[in-house]
Image: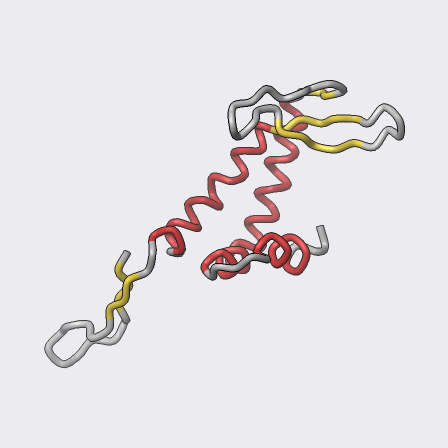
Length: 120
């Protein structure tokens, strides 16, 4: 992905061009974020029988292995609520999330979840 500067020399050429890996480009990261909330359809609500605590779990594995779905309530309503919440969070913080994802680092999850989205 080539990024050019907005500066143009007297002959009409842009004097500054740099290569940005597509995986870290703003266009690619924006596209990924837009599709992230769609994945909420793969989650369901689970209630712990011992304490009644509700959690959300994936209903399909990433690696194709079977998933245990005991005490799981699969509901379109739950999926839609998760998707709506995701869209609100991403819509409110998309620029901050993209800025974090543009830079490689080991603590991206903490920077996004703990530092940026702390109030949720």
